[in-house]
Image 1 (cartoon, rainbow, N blue to C red):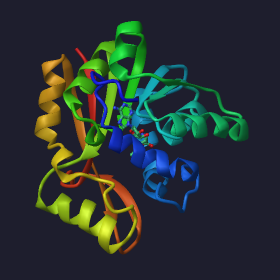
Image 2 (image 1 turned 45 degrees about the vertical axis):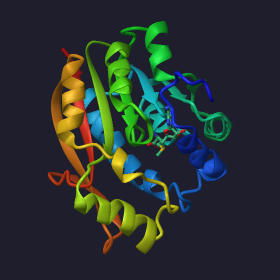
Image 3 (image 1 turned 90 degrees about the horizontal axis):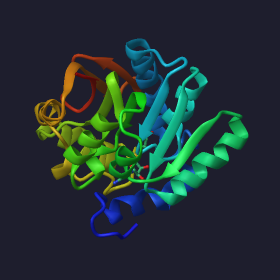
Image 4 (image 1 turned 60 degrees about the vertical axis):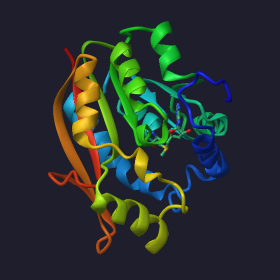
Length: 235
Ligand SMILES: C[S@@+](CC[C@H](N)C(=O)[O-])C[C@H]1O[C@@H](n2cnc3c(N)ncnc32)[C@H](O)[C@@H]1O
């Protein structure tokens, strides 16, 4: 994917391509995504109701969230620009027997092709890896049906998130490979909320996702200082 006008950072895609074969190993570099998945899945399901809904998962990677939403009865399309991750995602369907439509396409392109087609759009842990996150938010707003739900999760930008998400996770606890995250690309909730409101997505809720190095578990709650989920509705 080297087309100059795509909203993509080739180095970011390459990081995920190098690791793609380990996507479904719950003890690999993707362990944090496996660990947070039940929390975000329940949050989306309880907030928007997945059964019978047409759902788009943007930046779906190997399909951890996409597949789990399919198990809740959603008709899921997963898109990414990482070819290897998508291959892994498709292979995993053979093992799980789930049904997800995976496509290699930029979200901005899909928005032109299928405007206002989805009841729910999810875009988790992806915005902090793209050059122009506002463009992704705009495309998600174009893809969701009037009154539909859009969910984003990303990393907040402040000294605490630098300490925990970069130094702690990559250098002290070795939970993630060094260089996984670029601090300058982290996004404050106020900035993400601004991108959403600018394209007609009303912010309905913001929830923090916190990790306890003592219990080694994640919880949802009021603390949005490191990782957070934002729930929007198309106005
Ligand atoms: C941290 S992974 C998150 C995967 C998945 N959303 C999850 O939370 O389980 C980030 C994903 O974003 C994808 N990505 C990065 N830049 C992208 C872009 N410009 N368009 C689509 N996907 C992109 C990567 O290929 C990778 O699969």
